[in-house]
Image (cartoon, rainbow, N blue to C red; front, side, top):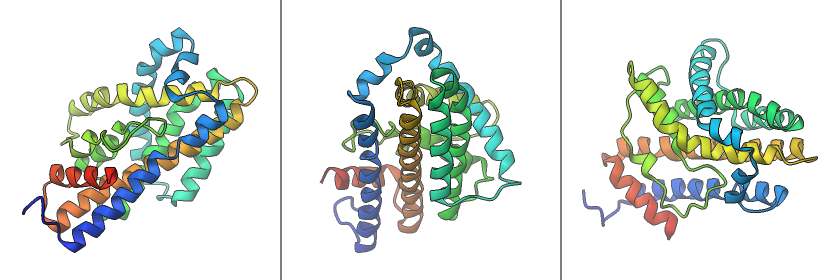
Length: 247
């Protein structure tokens, strides 16, 4: 199929997905307004020891989240988007109330809630979240830049990446995602550590992050469903999405 002639149904799908992508990109502004400064300066507020251990902490959080999310799906049904957001917002407030120690302790819990929310959205699009491939796609959503990133649609490589989740590939995939996610989570931790307003900043940050990753899950699985519906390779869909976002 030509990449220049876009059927009306596909054009509508891409337009809706682009709208979600743009919405996700504006969610971090409230956090920056609250804590002051710019996103790139937040990480500098963290103690050097925390910055040095951040990637390891994020890796452990992803490992814990993957196990906990998989086990909990057999016991706790998927929750609505607003309930996931409320739960994560409350956890962010609790994490920020005690500064960095409690914010670090809250990190794997919030990551688990985010992963469950992403899995729930995958289910909304008709994908089987018990399928190892879909589990991998859910993890891949964490490779997005994060709500505090300055992204004009150029950072879409994670959407077209082919992933697997079998055997040792789990650890390999987490190791590949952790550096990107640790940068985003480092900004979150720095916002929560702001003196006096840590609890408020923690709540606002978790609200923004939960909303962001849920929107990006809609983008990710919306593209996958559109690819199946229209019979178009994912990389071509990502290219069209990038054009729509920039337009």
